[in-house]
Image 1 (cartoon, rainbow, N blue to C red):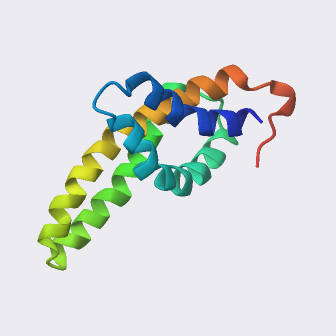
Image 2 (cartoon, rainbow, N blue to C red; image 1 turned 90 degrees about the horizontal axis):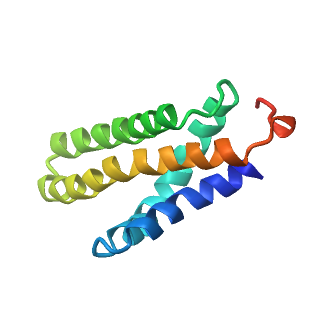
Length: 123
């Protein structure tokens, strides 16, 4: 239960805390949510099964797990000649590189506070 609440609550808390910034965090939830779930869930399940939740480490892990695929995709776009697509992707990836560690760190804080040791079992 703690994992689910932290997983859903982290992006929503960041969006609620920063919605005044031209609505960017709200759009980040819509645009980045699928990537957060597709990449973040397996990485978080793997990591939390082996280590205790530390928000700073989880934020760094989120940055790396988003940044590496984004960088590889950008390299692919450059090699295949998709210059206009690469320019648009750089803008989205830039926001992703900001929000991935924010969401990861808030997830770590929430999960650490919601988690009960009795229910913690490695996968």
